[in-house]
Image (cartoon, rainbow, N blue to C red; front, side):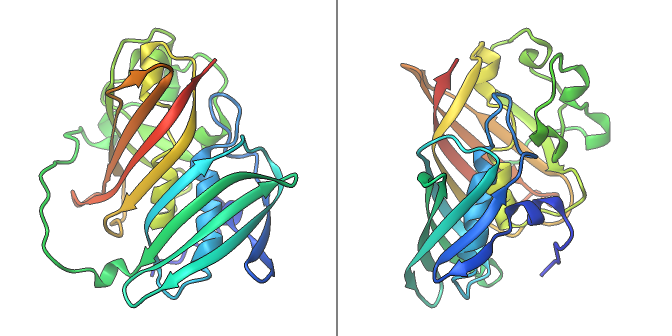
Length: 267
């Protein structure tokens, strides 16, 4: 497998085992969002990095995360519990505590994606985007201070939604390229972060903020190196709650991750 030592994502999501099924880490301030909270995908990735040490299976297959309280930089603990280790899959849960309070609970299943085989049907297609070098960085015209997470990822869009310039245009689907900014290639746990690493598409409806309640991610394959083609959609905003569906396709046109999250509008 590709080595990822020396990259910011790995150092900032790493934890130290301090007891049986218990890990300690310091949450970094390099992953804050548009509303100045610590990004949920980053918090999820830290839990998954701890949980993977409990299993012989190398790859994340699925994860469901419930966000109980906002997270912030500083010392945190992760506790893990193994539910079952089978031949093809292993399942367990992880909880993150900050200042003695649980802020995140995750249930996840791991497998070996390289050994996966069976019937296959793919009806969808990757976004039809110009090459990344022919697209634009949405932050080039962003009128406010950039969130720190934007320095950890790179995004390129063929067409930039209006909210990036302060004028929401009503888009409910956005397609774009994305990758980690320091050259680290994505793996399954990085994909679980990336599905939550861009501004919610509901911002283009004039919504000022959005906080994740629950996020489920499915990893379909180990991604090939290179830029990742992404599609994010929100079809239903009801009574202040909205869903967000996310797809990631790798440089070979393979679907590598899907997610759905439920979020609440914040002001």
